[in-house]
Length: 300
Image (tube, rainbow, N blue to C red; front, side, top):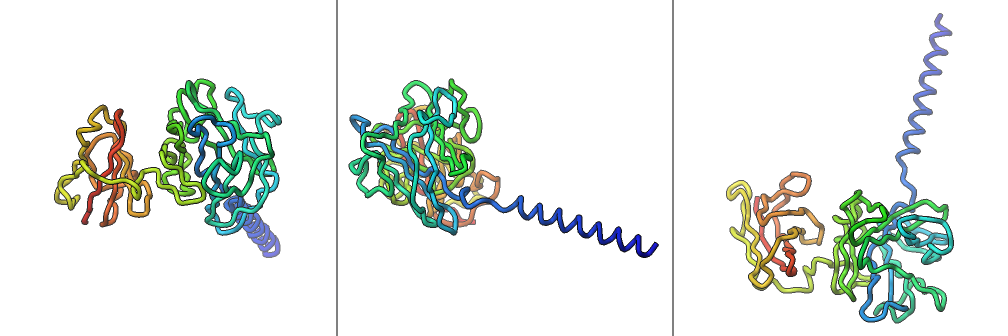
């Protein structure tokens, strides 16, 4: 009985060890998961020929070898492995917390490319003029690492990260689609990307224009704002862009998006319903007529 009991105990412990090892292996993410599509210019000013570019960003703590990775475009809503849908075959290392710039030609941006396409080739991204377009990043094993679907409607059913209705907006001609914060990926294209009229190849993203624009005509009241005293702060819309409200995005001083609003009042909480820390916050009001930016100091 004792030997049998010991044998059962040893068998049980062995099973636990195996399960624990399996769980550990399951929870380890591959290094490739750290690399994301970070900023794209698919509709350059004037002719698109030779002027498109894509910027990748490595969120991880280790360099990633991009040999054999590909950029792939959708073909009328279908992702395929045929050569007609491969926009670029990659090569080279992307360092941790660093950018990797893929360009049609060296004239595509103001920065030198990490990878230039062969002469005569082009990234060939669609402008999403009448329906959604998509591109995705695949690793050397052919597994999808990241995807970006932009424009609307998604009549081909490409499938944005976040599902139907989560497509990123269209960029302006000459502008880019850029992640709100470099490398930040919530698996929702609409939340993660914004149109940026001033692209930033190989430089930190600033799609909200917090650094580059003034704040004339936009005020918040009360300011400073004490959430537990005032309840909410009102974020005004300047008269020059007064029109149907699309949304209001609130950022912290690092440029991190903390709240997406559909009305001009903020209660001092983030999108998870938690009160944010004391500090200076920036907000971007988007209406049908344009954008405006403001600042508010929150004190808890």
